[in-house]
Length: 176
Image 1: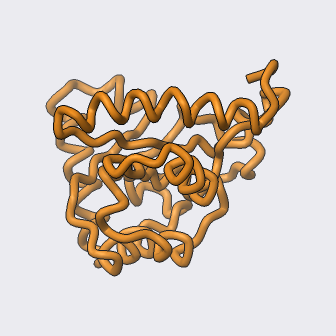
Image 2: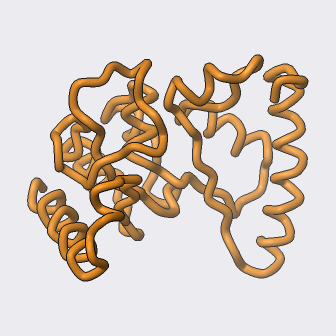
């Protein structure tokens, strides 16, 4: 928000998301929350908001329902300059789903755009082996999907794009 301070925005999100989580909880559902870490996004706001795992954990505590978890994304984890140790502060049950990506080569953290990503282990910029190894260590056993915002992949015929994506996920899992 460019109008609300960080704390005002935090409180507003906690209140609104608590209401959403309660509605979902009444129906046996969980809500996964994702922080957004590329500097090009959060620095574009007058009052930057959540962009780290620790900040997201604070919001989840403030919301205070028992049906919340992290929508974890290797892209945001990397852009937040987090490490395997940060992931080890989680339990497997804290993570609801995982997006697995890689980053373009040759850019600084100040240059990454959220909608330009690579398939998992395509470039080796994001340390996918450590990321996945930490998930194994905390006992995460949920879904992992790629989320490449990639012009070349979108231009491929659907069968080829699916095949390339499947191969990338298999290569990532083979690192373990």
